[in-house]
Image 1 (cartoon, rainbow, N blue to C red):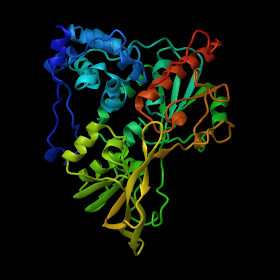
Image 2: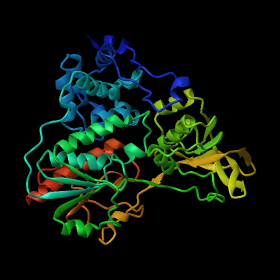
Image 3: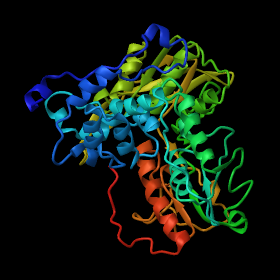
Amino acid sequence: MDVKERMAISRQKPRELVPAERIKHFDEVTAGYDHQNAILEAERCLQCKKPKCREGCPIHNDIPRFIRLLREGKIEEAYWADRETNSMPAICSRVCPHEFQCEGACVRGKKGEPVAIGMLERYLVDWMVANGKNLAKSCALPRDRKVAIIGSGPAGMTVAYHLAHAGFPCTIFESLPVLGGMLSVGIPSYRLPRSIIAAEFESLKNCGVKIVTDTVIGRDKSLQQLKDDGFEAVFIAVGAHASRKLGIEGEELDGVYHGVDYLRKINLGEDMNLGQNVVVVGGGNVAIDCARTALRTGSDKVFILYRRTKAEMPASQAEIHHLEEEGVKIEMLAAPVKIHGENGRLNKIECIRMQLGECDTSGRCRPVKIEGSNFMIDADAIVPAISQDVDLEAINGVELERTRWNTLVVDDLTMQASADWIFSGGDTVLGPQTVAKAVFQAKEAAESMIRFLEGRDLKEGRAVAESA
């Protein structure tokens, strides 16, 4: 097939549950490709000599290679080509914002739509499962030097995967009663089924990884105690679980539920109905998830308040599309300025209209209040979902260098913190970021930890590879 023929193929659409049905439950909305869709989509790839998609992928997956193998019918080989760099393709293929990463860099997208790289990656995993294939490589014989991992999110999972497969016994300490960190308590199951997360941990356990839940490092046990217990290296991956506040009057009233706190309660099984009229503040995926979750838990009228325009929303276009399909409206260029209430509970939200002012070097324009444009909204609940912060309680008792954003300072290449036996990556270093970026940093950290435990130079022969 020549380039002209490839350019003529339209991007294949995955099967999806219809909106009227899917808002009644938390079943996965998007189904994977069937074989015909996958092959047609793979044929759209131009197999660029200098693949921008690989540069756009934070993990630097060899995307053209696994797509080429897929369309040649070598699906199992394609899966393992992807798995060489990505320790959790079933998860990344579902929750990564591909349009801002690999697909956003796809040359094919300059004239039409980019190749659906995420859906092709998911197809490889789905095919392996459907055909009863082994999804993980063989475990290694255990060595006698053990490692502690604080947090079971994507960064912690990745470090455990690489260290366990190198033979180093790992123990993951998780503060929550469930595993997966933000994957489990921050992402609704209609985007990421819990069976997918459970399978990843089952694979880790099969390689000897021990897991301790309901244990808060820094409170129940200190880093120094871990060292005294014989853990020779520690990886800190606590995630960004602290909701950022709006900082406006009335935020202490009943009926105010902050984004990741709300999602955590729902995902841990708490029965919550926010009322009929729900306002969600923010434009990212957490805001979208909060709005769609409120619909699924009984709220009739849900809308999003965002201070910029839809073009500036950091949420993925697929999530925005699903949101609007499900009936959630987006109020653009508006922001809350005060929460009003009676008898300790909110009943109205005072907002103000905004306009876009000067733009920064990235092209992102600053929202500016339009004085005198205040208006009121009746509401039963408001869910601010504007960002998250990292809680570094885990490092209590050990002096580690931090940034002004309260994240850990680490070496850009080795991911080593200011104490040589401590390493970190993911949200703990970057602040709230994508799963793929956490996986990339954790993979680099695992390499460093292996060298550290073996007494080798952490930097020799390595070059910093920028994660997109």
